[in-house]
Image (cartoon, rainbow, N blue to C red; front, side, top):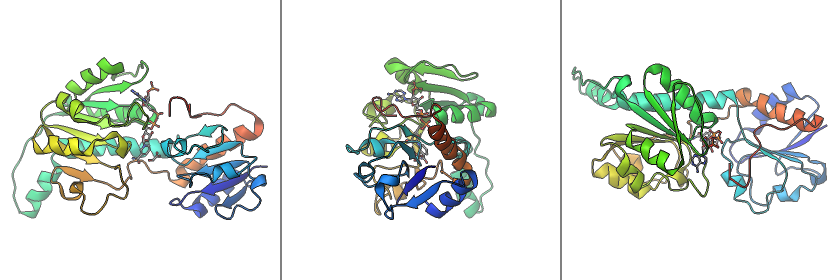
Length: 309
Ligand code: NAP
Ligand code: GLV
C-alpha cells in the first residue's frame, strides 16, 4: 500500500485527496508539512516543493509532478534520484489546445478592436485574413504542442511545428534543429511557445527570433516566463515589428504591479491559466502511475533528467 505525501503551496490538497481516494481507496494521503513518519512515505505528489523537502524522505521511490513542466523540481540539487513522472492528462491537454486556439482567434478576428468599437457604439467591419492565409508556428511538438497543432489545423490555419527530434504529424509541417527554427519563424504570423524550459530553450523568444518573424506577427507564450526576453518583446512591439503578444507565463509570477505588460495596449495577460491541472480530470494519470509503481509495470511520462524535460 502506498503512502503519499502531497506538497504544494498552491494546489487544493483536499480536492486531490478526494479524487485519489475514489481511484485508490487504500492509499494513505498525507499533506506536507504534516508528513508524520518520513520513513513511511514512498510517493510524493508535488508542485514547487520547498527545496530539500523530498530529500528528507528516506524511502521515497516515486515523485509525481502536478505540473507538466518540471524545471522547478530539477532546479533542486537535493532532488532524490528516483523516477520523476510529469503531468500528462487529457484535461490539461484539452485546456492548452483551447488556449492556443483562443489566442490565435482573438487576434485574427480582432476581438479587442470590436470590443472597443462596441463600447464606443461603432458599427464598422474591420476585415480579417482568412485562416487559410494565416501561418501558425508552434515551438514544441510534445503533448501540448501537438494538441495545439491538431486543434488549429481543422480551423484552416497553416500550422508548422518545431521540435528537437524529427516528427511526423498528419496535416502539420514539421521542422527541427537550428535551421528549422529560423525557417519556422520566417513563416509564422503567430508564434506559439510550448517548449519546456531547459538550458537550450531559456530566452529563445528574443530579439533575434523576433526579427525573423513577419511584420505584424503575434507572439503567444504559454510555456514559461524564462523563454521570453521581456525587454526584447517590448522593443519589438514598440518598433511596430510585432503586432501583439498573449502571455500566460512570466519571469516573475505573480506579474509584479507596475510591470509594463499590465497596461501595454498590445499585450494580453492571463495569470498562468492556459493549462490547468484539474484534480477531477488529472487524477486518473496519478492513480495509473501509482498502480504501475505498486505492480512493477513500466512507468509512463518519466522525465529524462539529462535533457531537462
Ligand atoms: P513535452 O511533451 O515534453 O514536449 C516538449 C516538446 O518540446 C517536444 O516536442 C520536444 O522535442 C520540444 N523541445 C524540447 N527541447 C527542445 C529544443 N531544445 N529544441 C526544440 N524542441 C525542443 O512537454 P509538454 O507536455 O508539451 O509541455 C510543454 C511545456 O508547457 C511544459 O514544459 C510547461 O513548461 C508548459 N506548460 C504550461 C502550462 C500553463 O498553464 N501555461 C501548463 C502546462 C505546461 P522532442 O519531441 O524532439 O523531444
Ligand atoms: C503548468 O504550468 C504546468 O507545467 O503544468
